[in-house]
View 1: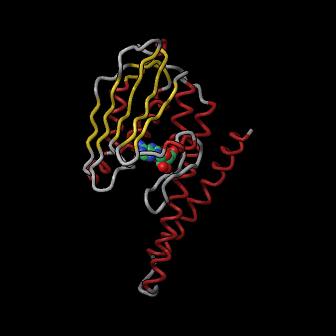
View 2: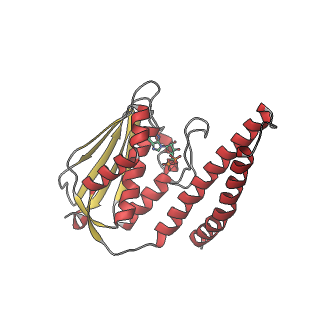
View 3: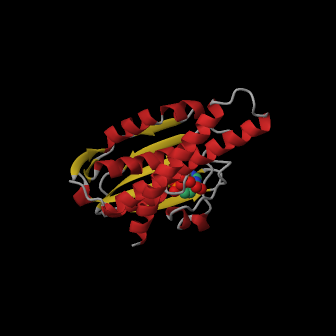
Length: 225
Ligand code: ADP
């Protein structure tokens, strides 16, 4: 019920927030020199806030859709997903001087769009939560079958996560960083957790503050092709 409610509310907020954003943008564009610098700054602040609100709404919608979605399963090549995600993130990668290295990854039987979101969230977080003054480095590695699982590890050299926050970060909206420090909606890892659950996979995290973090997703061998 809570998920259906979340989905309903975020869906209904989408259109008014888009309209409000358009109105403020048009207001600013149609100014012919009457606004003071302070007033322009206020308009720009409103645009920034409304854009952030749209990101939140769209992430919440993604989450709401994911929870129940069971599209037909496919053989999903994770190597192709990495290529697609890196293409989408190319601007961010060049702005931050980031390096993303991926070893050969397996093919997973599952839901393509969900697995893409999982890869996208882990890679973009690895770039986003960088350590001051150090260009981000994200490595994606896969282990051969270990016991009954195959793991994909996302290893970054970023700011790290305090040990006592490991559980908290997988909830909806648990941000450890202030919005003015790092932009985000706080839904990404909740999505990853749900995608893992839908594939009978588990996620573990290890991290050292100031050195980096490793997120490990372990798929059951029945999912690996
Ligand atoms: P968002 O990035 O949109 O805030 P997420 O759900 O992806 O939301 O992450 C939740 C929180 O976990 C982030 O706000 C951040 O504090 C922390 N976090 C996630 N990934 C990393 C990472 N690779 N390194 C450091 N902190 C991270």
